[in-house]
Image (cartoon, rainbow, N blue to C red; front, side, top):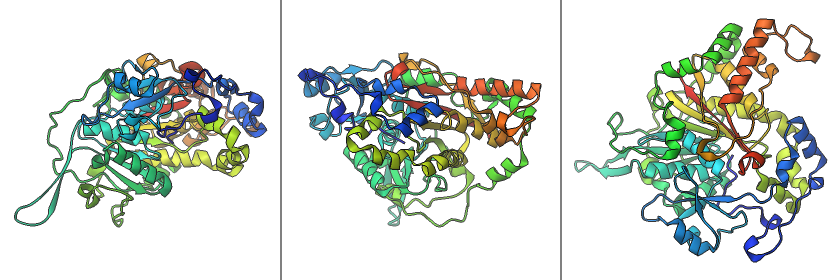
Length: 483
């Protein structure tokens, strides 16, 4: 989930260096024992929590009526504002900079968003006329960025027929946000309105694992779009990989994945599980938590042709990659940290929740569309394991990982983690030849293919962390739906 609400920084942990107040040094001894054990189990370096001088980032509002230059923003903030090369409209600030009293912030000209979250949105490759689904959308930074990209590329317009009083929708690109929390959805709605991006967005209070409302009906469906968006960020991410709806080239690129899955076999049980979650076409209309008038009366058609072009699943996680989030608990109290993140029943159910969110997002994506899976956790179980399980479950003829360039935009990435063989073998229904205490063991050929697949997942996914990347901890993978 997003950890990038507009004025969220480390608070009392860091003070503004411009005032010559020394930064407080965080001690690893302050971390609770159960969290230290969690880090050790998940092979996460505790040293990331000593990096308390990370820069913060803002994105400039793309609305031409709300535009602001970096120079003007620098004047208002009284601190250096550096545009991020290749990432359109992103600027880097001193990590202790406060936005709340800045006039540009009050006017909706800027919003706080970590750089890694912005890269996740660029990985979607939002194009003019796209209909995008954001599962676990709160508090709304990614949602606003998607809406901003669509605002510059298309339009939502309503008109009434002169022969009747019927309202017609003229829609070319929307974003649908889903979250289970009404309080957090209220934050999303407020952000959309503050930045004047609400005309392209609608919100639903719903469980992301079962949400099934399709994209809005488009009166101009099939009409060619004349507006083309391009930026250095998109060229780096999408030059070779976008618009391959038939999946032929993607299949060639993913041959190691396909060979591995074909060689190890695909269990009928998993096919049944997936097919059992196909879209119900007879559901009742769902009332949005928020929608502009032009989207409020959408008929919510339930045919395959109304699946989404792009889906981002920013899954609920333990937030261990968010330095600001973790360090705040030193002043808030570690008891609430245990309740919110480390309670054993929550940890036990988290992987199942993440898998279900990703599976449902994939179900709602059209053939040839893109699904981006992301978390702000650094654990293998919530990242590479989930992606590997998903690929093994749905089968190689339905989905492939798409390459994301390492060191894109000059931002170093952290090393990937090898997905668990037990997770992959369990999804495929491939029994172990060894005892359960040894973990999964296969034949020599199976283990060779398993290692190839594990390396493949590690290579194709992206990780960012404070030590390697100078950003919050973040993971993302991009999946192309073939069928």
